[in-house]
Length: 215
Image 1 (cartoon, rainbow, N blue to C red):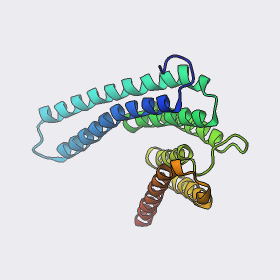
Image 2 (spheres, rainbow, N blue to C red):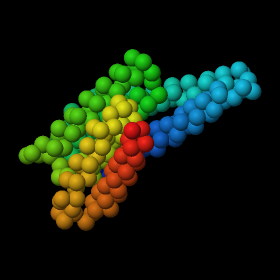
Image 3 (cartoon, helix red, strand yellow):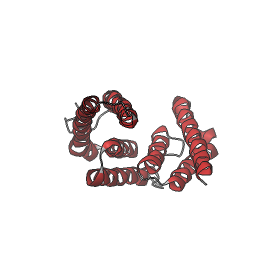
């Protein structure tokens, strides 16, 4: 369905997103666990070379699987979905989704490949942001997709680019803008919007305390 070059319905779009999110989420979790084990084993004086090699080999296998999944969905979005997106909501959704999967690539890649993935993620996120904040055809500050974009872009700034102040500024702006229009929030999106707002606030609290500890 995603390769049909026809605009997906909201339900189809969400099913596609959830399907890939479930697959990539499990692999990202595996990679983080393996990276932690590799780091701890590397610090042990008693660690055997064969054990560390086994962990590294398995982590590389997971990285290869992450590569495959990310490249597959990015190709589908680029070749089949972006061009058929007619509404601001779908355009923001797909550009944001592209940014997310480039960010996932940047999480485990190093050197030039990491820089390239990060640059592609930033480009996609900013395209989503431009569409979301368009004064005539954009999304309201309380829209869950616009809030989700702000959440993920701020995480990208903080975790991938190391830009703490920019991450905090973006998260605070999105949270404050949504609070200002909370009374206009439609009932069917209230739960999703307020959940993302809570995540924005949690990140702000965490990032601000991190900054204070470093000073």
